[in-house]
Length: 540
Ligand code: HAS
Ligand code: CU
Image 1 (cartoon, rainbow, N blue to C red):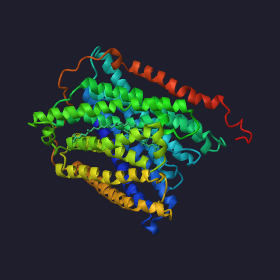
Image 2 (tube, rainbow, N blue to C red):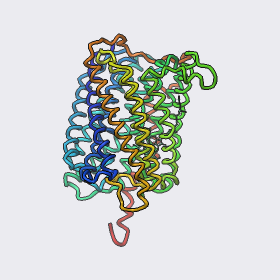
Image 3 (tube, protein in one colour):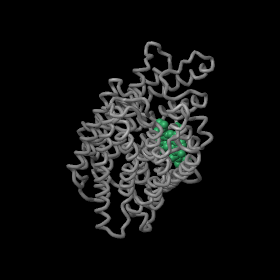
């Protein structure tokens, strides 16, 4: 049976996560309609920016953090087969994160924090927003501490043994998040809050953007790792086969942890505050961090092939047809991988130093992250929910067919939304604008794409509502779930024991520390040593 405490924690964390997600989907649909300029009466930049800021914060921070915390409690207790360490602490973390969310939501909805989810200064939000965001992060650190302690306790009691894969990935993600969130935490606590409260008249936006870049890349892998846990730990078994290689899986998670941190300057290629050499260095690291994803694509496809062939598939592609496409976990995995092809390709374009000049600050960028985050990642969150919600509520999934329809519509909606977004970026449409009507013949070419995006937004909203209905009806279902245990995929061959460093949290941390000092040490220190702008004749 699943540990009762972790079950309740998962339930309530997910209730918050998915409620935030639903609200954000309604806002998203409004935004795509407003921005198109097809409905004059809707046009309102203040309302648009309040909405898009709330949408971004709900999706990027609230959905993800609560979802990941809930999932982590389940994986820790079920894969390590031990009760949750300090449930009281976990609930404290939950409430602090929740209070932070509510505090941030008030100014967001009131239009006093229309600073987008990246909240770059010099646009300023009410101090309440920054304080809420800081509490949201602090609350999630409780979760990190619990994951790290549980992993360390298990390691002490099982010397020389390889950690179960699901927990290996979860604790890697907890460490990743501690390291990741330190950058934005420093920005918020030392720069933004004192400035918003009026204690400081000014701040250095270059330093703020550098600290945010520290967070901005690894945070996307914090969101992604639970999706990869589903790909490695649930998909092979649900497809009727085995995990192709557990060693490869661990290598991928370790790679994501270590190499996603020191590379954030690919978000600053077009910014002036860092030197070209540093950007190139981070650019090389960015290409390195695609390797764990390529390894994941390979390993998961190989696992699917094993399952398809065990199911009777023959020939080069015959195994694809014999996969259980009606299993929501398998279907979500296939659709996620398909979206990863273009989403990842877009990432490579972004990361290529010179090509970035073409797409930076254009509509291409939201196209990229909607496809790879809201598409690939979130569709796997749905899969995890369909797989585990019945186990945590104790009720049978109300309808498998509705779940399949929901996944397909999400895929179709996201394709309709994000493909035109990529094209619009190439046609020169900027991002972060509240309307696309420029009264220019050139921008007429944008119109048909806007229509597709509205259709995509509508399909996505319908799909999101269906997701909410399925979870709600399952919770209220009278039929009891018959398989209450969480089962993990078996590797096809017994995993070989990895070298000690690959299993040692201490070594991982030391590697990150070294790489972070190398990649961010001087780029941050320079703000305190160099008086670049003060030396200009006209002052600063
Ligand atoms: Fe990104 C901007 C580079 C991955 C999210 N990214 C963003 C932003 C977000 C985001 C939110 O270098 C916007 C930030 C902002 O607001 O300013 N990104 C990358 C690269 C990757 C990447 C190199 N991003 C992600 C993931 C995200 C995410 C994952 C969220 C979850 N991204 C960038 C850059 C920018 C950026 C620049 C800044 C742009 C700018 O100028 O502002 C890589 O990790 C991607 C690697 C993936 C691949 C794909 C491999 C394909 C596979 C599929 C195989 C499947 C098959 C089909 C063959 C190389 C594995 C099987 C079919 C069957 C039927 C079975
Ligand atoms: Cu990035």
